[in-house]
Amino acid sequence: MSSDSPQRCGLIAVLGAPNAGKSTLVNMLVGQKVAIVSPKAQTTRARLMGIAIEGEAQLLLVDTPGIFAPERRLDRAMVAAAWEGTEGADAIALVVDGKGGIGPKVMQILDSLAGRPEPKILILNKVDIADKPKLLGHAARLNEALAFDETFFVSAQTGDGVPELKAALAARLPEGPWHFPEDQVSDATERMIAAEVTREQLYLQLHAELPYASAIETEKYIERADGSVEIHQQILVGRPTQRAIVLGKGGARLKEIGSRARAELSRITGVPVHLYLHVKVSPKWEDDRSLYREIGLDWVE
Image 1 (cartoon, helix red, strand yellow):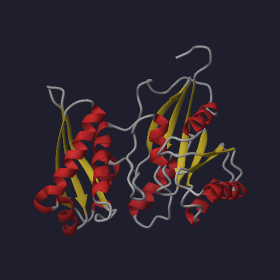
Image 2 (cartoon, one colour):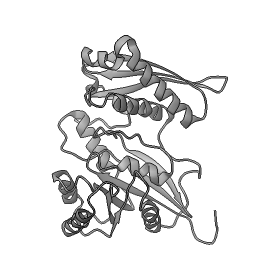
Image 3 (cartoon, rainbow, N blue to C red):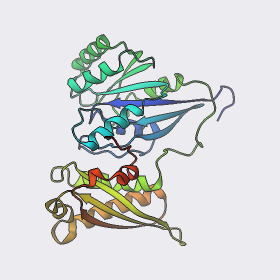
């Protein structure tokens, strides 16, 4: 690190509708995976901070759940977490799916942001697969609806435009000491990361088959004397038919989920991981206050 310029540190809230690519963008800005991604909408549930470095600036990127019209208690908790992620932000970055265009969910977010004092950055994502002429139209329409301070066109998937975005975000941060060590990339606990990695595999392998209503509870996270980690988790589903889907024929699907999650966790932790999974039918899991704490959400009536 150079001492020629002062340190900067600040919080940037990353907002957007479900599937806009917020988590992929945060991962790209950080330079490694800190948030799970999947084709399934509303993959991100809890507020998660990714920590990125740009020169003398430390960017605290709050990856929030997608904002949508909540119907169930879990939905309300997720949307509440998204808006709580904007509290105390030095800037708000709105990520819009450049391919999908502008829908009612995006317009509702714009209405909620109107009148807020924070600098607002518009990020049109997925430019690698979007129709280029339409992108300019989207940008014009969105800036007419809300006066953004800056607009960026990026692909979180390929990294196109991300360095310019990162530099611009860093320049907006206030001067001040860093809040985290230079090598820390997230504020998530080990237990939370373990649960998220398994949930990602659940979504990736059962995207079309398993309903959204499932959760992972990390029951034990033990650091063994030999340096390896032992993790016990239960996959919560609402009905016996969903349990059968997760297990697969002869337990084959569950074994594959565990194998891939174990490999990913070993890569993240840098040590051997012993992962033990079992599936539990819990029709009322969405009403379990302790589980909300486990997955990083507040209880919302």
